[in-house]
Picture 1 (cartoon, helix red, strand yellow):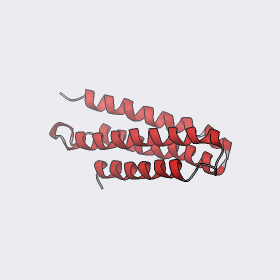
Picture 2 (tube, rainbow, N blue to C red):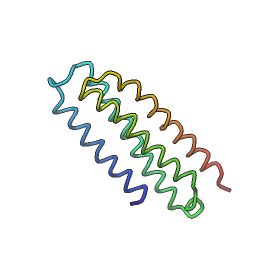
Picture 3 (tube, rainbow, N blue to C red):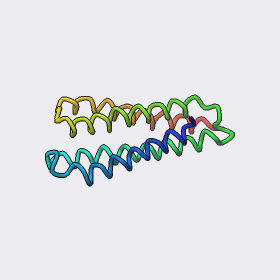
Picture 4 (cartoon, rainbow, N blue to C red):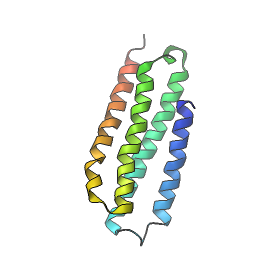
Length: 124
């Protein structure tokens, strides 16, 4: 599957998890955990869209073979799983220690953006 397809699947999951949080979690989790869920969904969706944009860039002739774009997509994907995934699990399980994992996902997302900037900046 190409990067656009992966991004679309992540976006699908983001919409589904957003709807789940809006309609199924109220009254089942601590009220103060709902904003945590919303943050997870927001970053999940931002980076799903970023993945699709990277996929479009990969299809451009000048960028087709860019290993940096491929790495950026991998970092975004891993970042979504670790950042948003740790927050989803924190809310669902009330295992607060998962909050210590979240910044690692944030670092993956940041690395994805820097890698993307570096890859696009190398275009001649």
